Length: 85
Image (spheres, rainbow, N blue to C red):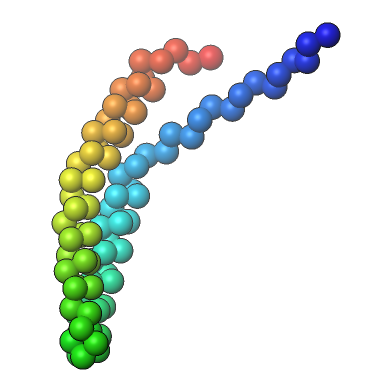
């Protein structure tokens, strides 16, 4: 006698734009904190590349934000067109 399987839950599909914005803000805050409070320490220990890493993370966040905005628009369109039970 086959066992009945429990219905699968719907996959999570949260809006992604807030995650992209949070990443942008995080890179910006860390970069500014390093620049303002730890610039001397970074120079003394040869870690100025940390500032460039923060800048790169911040700048790469904008293409990521654009992709997430498109993802969320498609998500809304998909949910509007799908039949509801």
